[in-house]
Image (cartoon, rainbow, N blue to C red):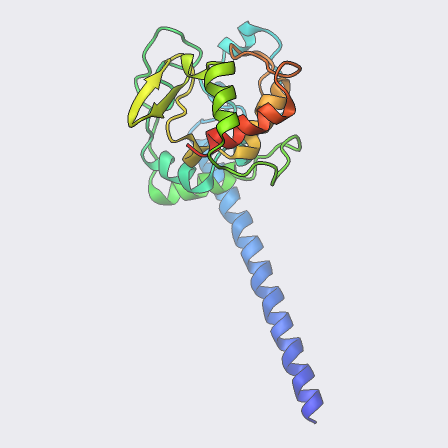
Length: 226
């Protein structure tokens, strides 16, 4: 009798655990579906943000038609907590307008309420690319990565960074100040290694075949530590 009661308890616990996990999955899927609906109702896709991959642009004219960055790999690129907070209170990431090298970014991205931001974030985090391998890059201060970033490539000529408590660097590319709060290291590495997958046409130099794989990993770890 004791053995039967014990087995029964195990079965009940197992069933309850499965039910809870199943409910969690269904709830997450429902939130993502709700977020997709909000995203589409506010017309965030189309001319502003691509959510379907892979990339299709072939010429710079194709790129110039876009009003905002593609999001079909948002789940690989952004950290969830940062994305949810940013959607509620957008801060300028690009000092200049998207695709511009002279017009200042007015910082007028629409804001979402807390519930909407949470749902849209759940949706965007489902958008991933098979070309990003998880668990490759660990964010950490990396002297070799810093050397490659600042000396070999002088990335700060285009990207703003924080150094000795001051913001320095160029304005023609997205700011990398506190980039580690925003970007996933695995995506940074994949973007450097396979640029044509994520953005076939861009102003940023292509380092594939120029920088070593070790350099790319070191730079990714370095930037992810900001």
